[in-house]
Image (cartoon, rainbow, N blue to C red; front, top):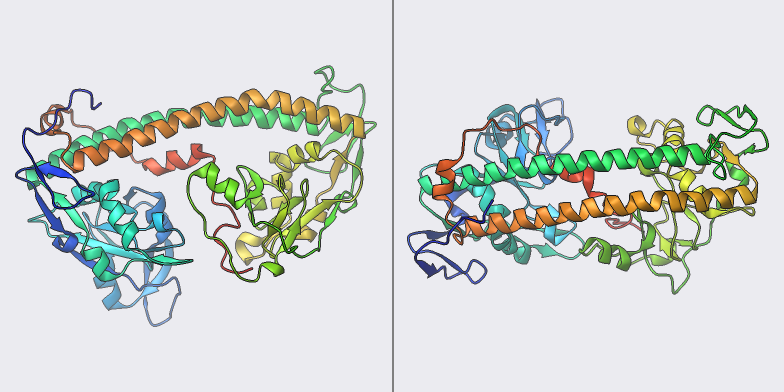
Length: 480
């Protein structure tokens, strides 16, 4: 995609260390060439205000493009707020506040004017002066690490970071002529369409592999197959539990509270802080940071109020409805709002580790609560309402060993595909950086590109579905 691109013939020092050199005829300007509006519209509905759709922080953070067909939340705003923060085609929204410094300044381009949609709290709305800056180019420039770095160093805070008005306005941008801005946008949009197609293909592969893994796990943990023979057991009986169906005749079905009970011990003096993640289970924050390559906010006060966790405990949180109970691989402490479950009898933790992450169990757990509507957290009572299969210890051990072997090849394949995705992401980041800072001349390449219809799927939608990494449910805590 960039192999045939050439550098510009003549360059000059931009005067900004992190931008380096730019083409001699380009300008380097402050972000003051755009009108900036920092929204104060919150999520509350008031009787004396007008109904609006609210574009929030998450909408910007997870989407490159803001389109009228997106499902925004409903809120209200005053007439003045609607007039001031209504989204117009070519606007660029950026995240102004966040728990992590490197989540500051994430941009999204507004593609079409939306009279009923306004920018929400924690966002800044940038409206370029059209005689100077194209909105699509501003969006791409803000995606460049050389520009985004300026937001990161200007962000103030300790446990929460934010940008002041002056910090946003003082950011330096490389600025080519308007015709060249259009060529850069055309080239990078074309590149993104190709990248999205690649990401969707990888997404489909990962989804198929995950479905295959879930099918193997479900058959083994519910006794649909005897893992020694690969065939069904000789005889079955009704389990009396909807999500299990029939189970092997010699298996038991037990009340879940007989197998795991709450661990009520508070944090010990030397406990390390743990993070509960759907991708990696319950691990130390240090290990989580190593896995994902970024820092997370650490709690410094009231650690003694957190809950103690031992290896092979399971942690239950409100998000367990999404990914099952998480197995603890390290000892330490975790937020007091979590439920820590310890084995109450002799059992094979590996078997239950697969069971608690199976789709059948997760759906059964989800059916015990109305938390999406009522704001209810999952708790021990929800856990107790889902009965569990209980094979003999020897059978549990066989199933655990079988599943570890059977799913390893799938796990390695998924990791390989995700590694390929990481490489294409790195390529995309470098390509944007080189193009918007004038290291590569794309004018001729853009002129040769065919006209294409923009695909509706945002890049980050494909990104997120194959990423396999989630924010730790403990990482952004502001309470003990």
